[in-house]
Length: 175
Image (cartoon, rainbow, N blue to C red; front, side, top):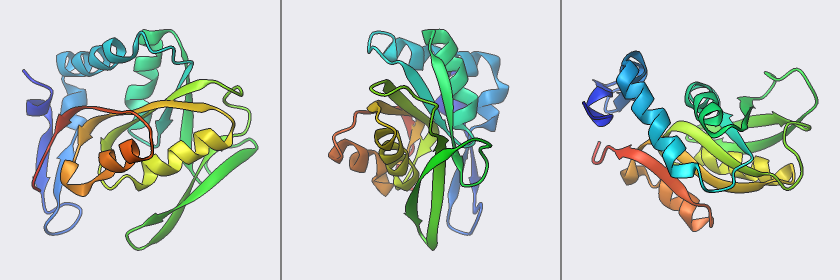
């Protein structure tokens, strides 16, 4: 079974007109989950990555598994106020307002090459903020990786336009 076929679409969630791509059904399938992890590990095994940074919350599911497969460490990127130690944050715009993501100041060694991971790339706001955050702590962004790209929303293109490599496993176009 393909990775894409294991992703459930829920119409009108969280609001009317949205086609929500639900990866919980993919995570429930052991072969599908293994295919995701193996696909990412295969893609990045020769790219000299020192650490994976997972974006809250679904990046916390795939990131550590890929990090384990690559034999590297994992660090969390969280919403403001969720990390206990000293943090660095970046504010970014949302459709209605703004938000802040943070990372521990001492989580990544200076000059490390970091792969940013999340489940989905849509408009790119959170991923672009994560790129800025990784650079702010003195590390290099090796790329961004997602299970799903929604190309009509343009986030992956914004990442590439920023000069950062973007990789995804499947696309859902048009809705």
